[in-house]
Length: 455
Image (tube, rainbow, N blue to C red; front, side):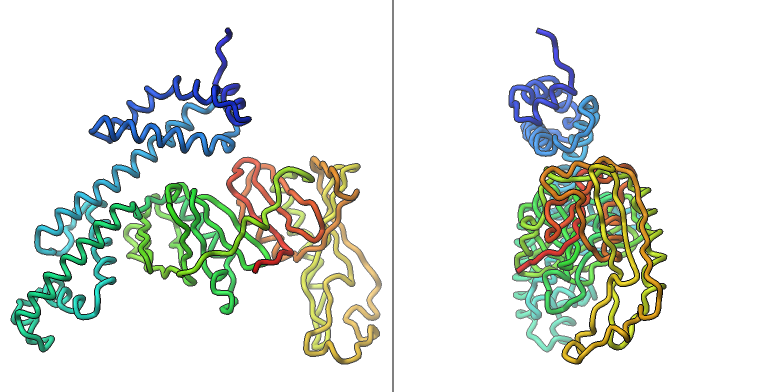
């Protein structure tokens, strides 16, 4: 029987052929074991990590666009998996050492693992009661003696000793729990960039608190939406996150992005250490996120594929015919509205706007009679502007041509959010439902333009 190459085995495995993926495991299992063994001393740990590597690879196999690149792609997953294991282990080792000595000031040459251990200690201290936190700060941070601590806090010395003992036990328990659940994550510059884009998609409506935050979901997904647009990206560093976390409002990602950063997630707060920029404290919302999966259109069905550069150019070009030519008044409001038209017969996508599009009566004027003679376009000759670009359209059961009106500003956001450099796929099924934008080169980068309803 002719030996199948990686490309064919990947294609078969993606279609559900378990035998094909088993052949890939046999072909590369020994090589991956050798690679992770460089960081993992115990063979049993290395074997567990090899299983984890292939499990992650199987889950992400549909993201590999070129099956002939399976070997280097798998090696990257192995290196990242082993590196995260090593970092978690070093954090635990350093912390255990820190509990057995006095808390000294950080050394100039302090390692990254030691810095992470200190971050986790500080996080554990924040969980202490006020009374226990006071004695810790006075005795260890301000370096006061038992007697000085007792005097400044108005306590008996035995009370100080007792509270310090209980506080140390509590910190050790908290730290043990944090290292056990593995809530320290190593983020790359690309992860930080994805987080940055997520912060640009959150809501500013304080009455919808969940939508004001950024959601980290299991499987490494990061989600943000304001109810009119949605961003879905992946964070490689949080792919083993065990439960959903919502970062509260106010998350700021430092720029320029450092090569590496550490994210620590606790019960009520998270801490982002971008390295050299100071530790950023992030509140965590104690409630589930909206069911964003229910509004994501299927990637099958009607679509058009266009060049991302040409799409951005078309969107920018039509912008010159929006606000400058559509003044708002006290009675008439204006929203920068454009029509998207997709034609399978012409294999084109067109953006259209006109003199009358985007106007509506102001809410406070809605009950009063409104004359179209007083409209902003009154006396202005009718005009219509269209810009077109070629694509690969397949409308299937959608009407020919397919048309939908969208907010131009939101359209700019969703196109920018996927940061596509190559082709962009647009999926749609109904003018009343969401439009899905996916980067063909990076299928994990998705953004959605609604109308949508989220309870």
